[in-house]
Length: 212
Image (cartoon, helix red, strand yellow):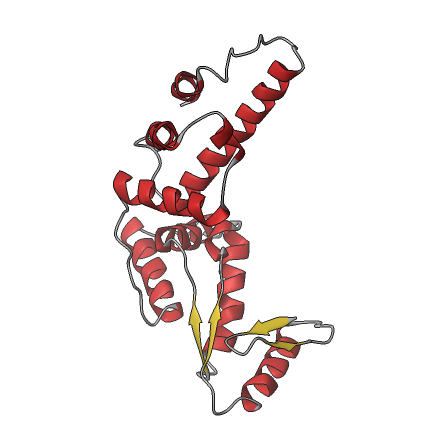
């Protein structure tokens, strides 16, 4: 099932048996929307195993080469290059390939897949802090607000965004992991199991520092 924005048209696809079948259906979809520019976003390609990364990109190239749609593939290009390098090394079978040759081939492969590469600069701690604060406002009142006022909640965010945290995804993950552990600790307090009342809830910021 494909959800096509902005008019939110839903296209129900039949069972797909192989890449060629999907390519045929995709071409039919494009032919039916000649007057519109279709933008397709493909996520998490670089979060697969090496073989799956290269297979996914090779399959995508069959659709990209049709030239009728714009494909946006958010990814870490270094992960793509590394996957290609590792596959070359694994399949050498005694061939003598220099590291320079392997590096060149991996970059050449990426150049053939990605016609334009837009590099996003690293986000600093302040960027990630603002991101998490805005994210918290979007989801409304968080249960942790029952124990921390806004100022202390901001302090908590400053503690959790350690120097090792580099991306918005990592920021959300560390916040979620901490709040899950905190909720479990609060449950133990309420049930008077292993933790006395207030052991954690009265020292949340100190607990966060230990957690990090």
